[in-house]
Length: 189
Image 1 (cartoon, rainbow, N blue to C red):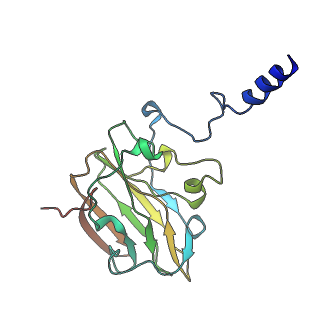
Image 2 (image 1 turned 90 degrees about the vertical axis):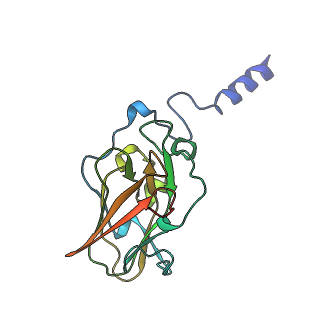
């Protein structure tokens, strides 16, 4: 009898209750993207070797693998990224900003078909406990990179249709560059 009670007590502590999940999940009814630009600074990214290569450059000082064509994107919910519904896709593509780059703003159309989803290092890795929530999804992202090293940020694009083309605007001081991109990285017609 004592062994049975010990066994029941030991196993009941190993199973998470409804309030304790090892990975946060979010239903589509909890979808609430940021109404303002998400702000990321030097402290939110990782610094290191210069990953801003010719293959990743979107502009002279900003890069991401967004232009690399992928044959298939995972559904956002399958990789732990909150989305408006289960049929949305996530394009993982870290963002790289050259050292000393003036503030950069990325923006997308506000049509509800795609969102920027770059986060802080703490949110992505979960060490701060907040994880990735829909509050990180936005149509505008403002970045202040580190002064001495390339800064990289975790995240990518959240898209309803990976084959749909849309404009990605990259603003730095008085310069604006508009790129036509698709979630899957294929060329736009």
